[in-house]
Length: 361
Length: 116
Image (cartoon, rainbow over all chains, first blue to last red; front, side):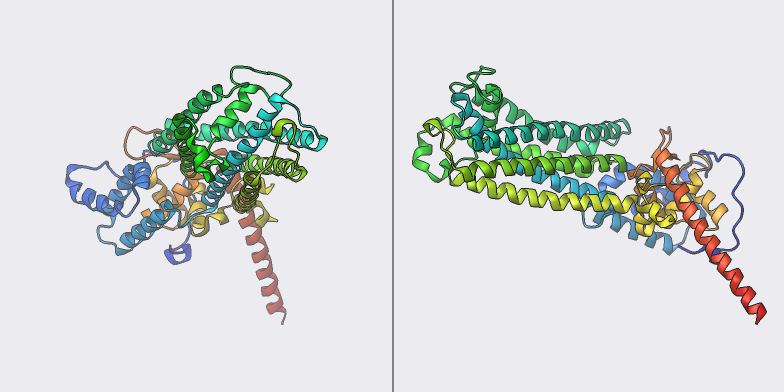
């Protein structure tokens, strides 16, 4: 871009409000050559960009071509900008808002991994408590902390969906919803399969299905059974094929389908997050929710660690820990660290975007 | 103004300069791409190339500093949002402070040279 000094003296701004209708005459049949050249230049940009800005950008190019028919700098500028847009669409070049979105998407992925293993561990204890309470105070406290953290995570998940949902509705209203359709369908299909399958197999669990608060359980039986059924695949039975072979075929099939459904739900959600145009305020809010989720996950991990190290097997071995629980702890720890780093990335990016005021002081 | 009030134009990197020009132009009313080019050329003496203009426009749009208006034809007008107005004001204040300091020091320098 040339500087004003190179272009000549500055002139004062024009008085009065400007008119959006200002501009060259609309494209006519005689300008077909310019329209063709504009269409060719537009090909530098990715499809998603063309869908959003293609029509108006073509009009601008046609007007510019009419004023300056031969200008290699225009072609070079469009090519440079188009390549950058393609790199941006591929996630290889980004500005702070994009980096913040990427950080939030990674955080969502880490939360999903954490929640899957956390729900498997928590459901095991919750179902055990349906039959008999833990014998030791440490396990009771651990279970209460884990349940509180799960409840907080559920509330935060709902809070996180609100601005994202609003941004999605805004995109649809501005006719930019086409890119969101695929990820939304993927996430919706995953959630539907998980909900229906979890409910179906949860109802088949003896002593919990259909009863809201049997015995003295810490959480409603239906919730515990749903948690157990939706995370049925997180089990050490995979290492014991002989025992697994004795399971009903439908249950084994569900153990394969449910992780696929979780993957669809997480992948769809992350793609949506990457494509949504979140406002700076929404990104800050999502970062805040992510920070609160990090605290809840840390609390859950502390409770789970307390239970595993306590090593209480409980009445009839209901709360017995095994290698799979240690593996769950390791995975959750890793997810927490990854999520924390992603949250820092999102915070820093949002901070870089909001650091404008600091330059003025 | 707190840093949380808006996005920094400096965070837009190479688009920061064009972004300031676009926001300043839209402060005078809604405009489509071509009208923006002509207005900026008129008040700043700079002609933004189409690729540069839309690179900055798309970033400002994605950050909520400007918004597209509905249009019957293919030329879509944009207008400044409240967040965009806050961001522009903060940026221009910083620029004015910079200009004041620079001019003041230049004045003192000229005085010192005159004295010697």
